[in-house]
Amino acid sequence: MLGRLCLISSFVVFALGLSWFLGPPAASAAVIPVTSGLQVHFDATNVNGDGTNPSDEAVVATWDDVSGNNQDATQGTGGLQPSFTAATGPYFQPAVQFGDNHYLSFGNTNAQTIFVANLPGPSVNLGGLIGDRGADNGIRRSTSGSAGWRGTTTNGDDFTHPGGSQFRVNGVVTETAADGLLHTVTAVRGGGTLNVDTIGEYYNNRHYVGDIFEIAVYDRALNSTEIAQVESYLQDKWMTPSSLEAGQLTHTSQINPNGRPVLGAANTIFTGQGTGGTVNGVQFDDAIWGTSTTLSTGVTFLGSVAGGVRTANTAGTISGPDEAVLERIANGINFYNVGTNGTLTFGNLPRSRPVFVQLITSDAASNFNNWGGVFDISIIDTVTSMSTSIGRFQAGTEPNNYDAQLATFSAMTDAAGNLQIYVDQLLAGQHAGIAGVVVLGIPEPSTFLIWALGLMGLAGYARRRRNK
Image 1 (cartoon, rainbow, N blue to C red):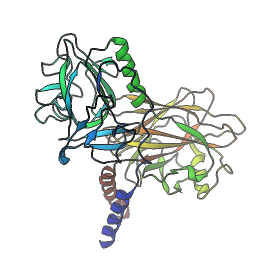
Image 2 (cartoon, one colour; image 1 turned 120 degrees about the vertical axis):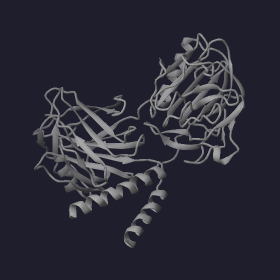
Image 3 (tube, one colour; image 1 turned 90 degrees about the vertical axis):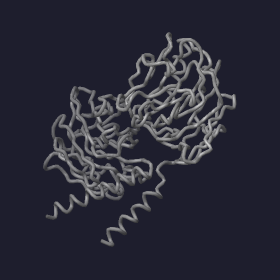
Image 4 (cartoon, rainbow, N blue to C red; image 1 turned 180 degrees about the vertical axis):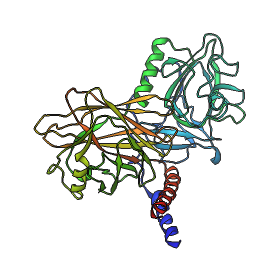
């Protein structure tokens, strides 16, 4: 019992001491394209107003207005202050995070057009994004669980209720935006301006819960061209997927090179193919195609059978400690021919959290430039069925014979704690396949600690079951 407590205590210290990210990104070089009528502008790449940000997870007492009008948003009460996060959302962006009772106040501001880039958390009934705190007016989420905003079809308390108003999500006229969806909001009020003075609440403790990336407030109705310009600016800045990086796998140190927390690693095989093992500290658990498997971390994995069994020959192309293990993993593939596709689904992950993914691919080519494949990768949200394109890469023998490839990209788990990777092979007559997949975490320390302790219990239970 004492040993178990010591193990857990050590893990707690380790988890709390980890550096989850290499530091906040530098302030974006992008400049908001419309400045005429701009009254306040809050940007999470420049919270301090001087090109710098607070440290990760620090409370935010002041979010500087970068419009030049000195309308800084402040909160003097510690328990009501939001916090700064250096990396959140599907693309690991900085944001100001608001909880159940957090809000920031700024000077009275006439508003007719408002843009917000945000990622709402679990909906709070009528949670206020921005508004006039004392007057029951503003932009607010709809009722709990309704997955949307109160836009133009509600009542006089809503910013866009008057005739001639517009409400848009990601540039489309709609009020629908699910919890956990990174998106832009555009609100244009018909019939004149409305005062706003608060971020994160608008009336009677109706708080917004979630991440806010950027806010721009104008005292006039922007025209359609200007609206499109600002929406494009926000979407390019906050909603562009991080680039997929891919190349030949030549050394074991390429697996989890930064030593991030390993959420799960699967050696994807058919019965009879080579077993997994540990590579650069990552334990690859055997996962049979078409069979749900609980990995040693407690995460589940299911890979659909898209093609058939093939065996590559990567001998001599990989070096480093554990090279024999990595070669064995890279040799066993489930090939994908043109027109076939498949999914790699991880479950029991932290919900709505950013992760890194590494895909190991190879093929069974017998000579140079014979067989290969181009994989097109997307992420499917199992809750909303929405698809996010990640990118494409050469999954076969380019540029050398018998080699394995490694693709690394960022993604976001969905609200159910699933990560579903969709793979589509695009080249005719080619037979590249998946050999292994690793999911690495960069969560907030508290989130990862709770998740990890829970999975430790599950793993211990699984071991006791096996021992019996």
